[in-house]
Image (cartoon, rainbow, N blue to C red; front, side):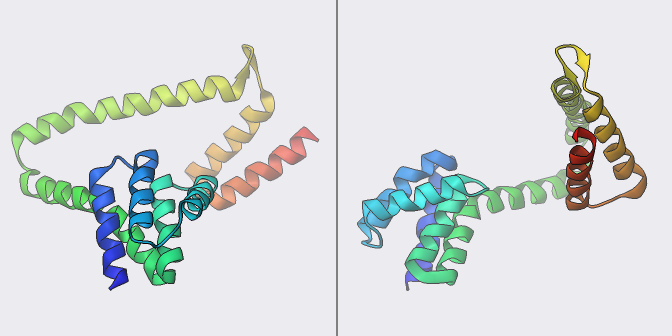
Length: 176
């Protein structure tokens, strides 16, 4: 069955590559070797996958699957390419659940947590320098919008799409 073959091929591609561009030669070889696509069609798939949002490897798998076997093919190819991620996450959750009371793991997590917060804080400072201060001068438009959005996140718990729309509207109103 072509559906199972698509799943199997993309699972192998997912397990033997490191996503993105490293998947392209494997996808190319498989599509051509099975006679499902020509080299030109594979190039078209890659171009479309590169232009659409999301990871290149997953987009390529989805578009190749839909080209070969329709919507079901797209689902099977995408699920196949996601198998490594799913497998690793499943194993990590089993490992974590089994050893969550382990003193060594707890000590490791006690070290990882503050480092994670520090990395996020460093990124926040770095992005803030570029977003709120141009040439060492405050960008008041950005500071006002950022402050309003921070307030709406903390006090009103608005959804991300609503916050983006509010930010865009404020930008249009303040800049004009």
